[in-house]
Image (cartoon, rainbow over all chains, first blue to last red; front, side):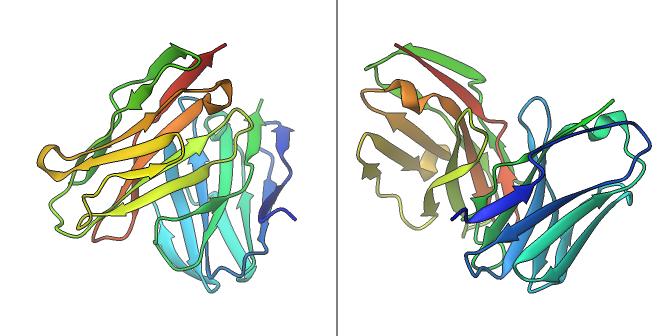
Length: 113
Length: 113
C-alpha cells in the first residue's frame, strides 16, 4: 500500500487550461502539504492543512487553490495554467503540524506547453 | 533570518569511496531541528534523520553517519563505502521556532560503478 499517493503522476497541458492533482494518505496523519519543486530541484512549500484547516498559505498565485475534503485528502486545483507552473508538485503528510518529518508522495510532473 | 546552505551542488565519486555532504545553517533560535532527506532518481523524497539542537551526539545508521556541530552551525552527512544505490539528491532542512521547514538547495550525489 502506498502511504501517500498522488494522481496523476504526469500531466501535460496547454497554457490557460485548468487542472487538478489529487493526493491521499493512508497513514492516519493529521497534516498534509503541497510542495513545488522547480527544475533546479529547489523545494518550496505552498500550502499546509491540519485536520482540514489551512495553516500554511505561502505566497503563491491565487490561481492555485487547495481543497481538503477530509484529513486524508488534499487536492490542488490550478486555474489558467502558465508556462512557469511547469514543475513537480509533491504532496506530503506528517503526524503533527510542522514536525519536519514528512512522508512524501511520488510527485506529479506538470508540463505546461 | 533562517537559512540552509548546501554549497556542494554536485559530487561524483567512485563506488566504495566515502563521501561527505555538507550542510551549514543559520538561525537565531535556541531550539531547532535539523533534517536530511534523500531524493533518488525515482523522485520521491525520503526522510533520513531528525536531530534537535540540544543533542550534539553523532548518529550512525549502517553506512550513514551524521556529524552535528553547533560551534560551526553544521550538520554534515557522511556515507561510508558508497554504493550506486546511494546516487540521489540529498536535502538538508531546518525547522525553527516558526515551525516551517527551511530547505537547502540540495546536493546531487553521483556514485559511479
